[in-house]
Length: 358
Length: 199
Image 1 (cartoon, chains in turn purple, green):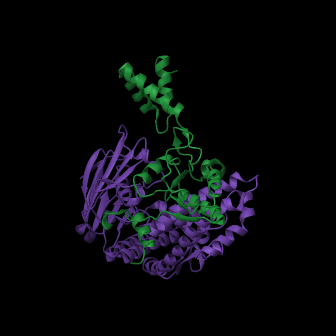
Image 2: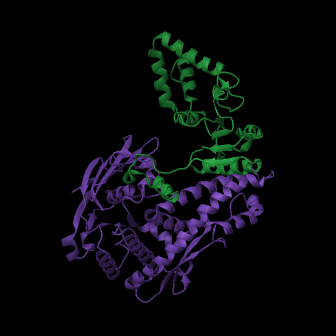
Image 3: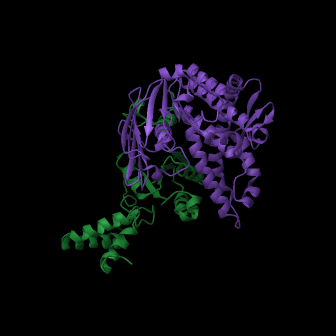
């Protein structure tokens, strides 16, 4: 849970300090004033990376060489990230630098939801894998480690395949990479299967509260049969000639998908926009519950402009669900009137206008 | 066109060719050289040429050496039946600081990395295998970094060496001694837990 946030030269902010309530925080302002930037700074401290698909350098304010984002958590941990216009970003805890910015993951867990998350329902398998990877990395350090190893070993193995498209590949050359892949890959797949099994009933329940009778289910769809290290190695071996021809690895969790179905129909192909939206909100609420169960305290929820597209009933239900979960919540919206009066009374309201917060 | 006089532009260009030096740093270094006393610059130039001309690689262990064989390889007090395999010459310095290891070394000059086009033929592996044909050889200690490439190179070497009847070991990884659990980075603590041992 975050208590204070200090920004300097981050996006459109010159230098500000913001205090956060442990409960509901409303960031109110017209479009393009810096609401989302504030949310993004909080996300950066949680994940070590910028939220939108943009480069670090673009988060540095015009005319500055670097941007600093510093947060004081409620447990008094001080996390900070420095983004540079040129060069690598650095992250530190209590002033001591971490080896990688991603080492911040797990210290300040968050769950975020913005319009871009609709890709979970209608986007590519890659969007759903990224969702699982991000959320699970916050819960399980071993998952983050295996993921890092897997991605690197996969890139190396694919490079080896491409280099030997025309020339003979000695089996002993590819075997050590296969072993690394099989070990990390089988661990990743098993962990994802387990977590989705936990998430599915939580999602159904949240969806029931939010959207009524339609039944929502999640299932993990593995690309191949490899279930353990040995099976994985065997599959890699038997697909080798195919892989050599295609120049990439055709076995493994980097090809898996998460199937989201409403009333038994895959949402990706059959869902209406409304169905997709409530499905994604349900998944995020369930994620919040799962993280809370695993780490023993509710993660901070970051909601970017989610009210504008929800009708009043669903909006109220969403806010009720959140209050019930009882963690720190940060919501951006354009009008205070989007939130019911009794909630407004309890909320910490931050008004944002052209890079200033009051 | 460079805005600098020819010799200065040439100096900047030379600095820029060094690893980790960008345009700005190259300019800063070049301007610093212009402000240095001429004697200092001359000594610097001599050090560069001398290092490059007088140093080569040991024909046994491939470490940087002034003669044909390095000091460690020609030291009769070192155990000749044990070889510690490292990626870079600088790793030898780290092992030597232990004052514990009394065997010999072998420098691979890199790690397997298909992404960088580096295969076994680009590393000093054939030279290592040649050394292991000596029947008195007992153990190879693989001391590559605990990265994906370091681990994979170790795995590759182990498969290559074991059939020769030589014992292959790998450095353990875990908690830094004297470190506090609370401050260990998660990855280190995780690996220390996974490789825990019975008391």
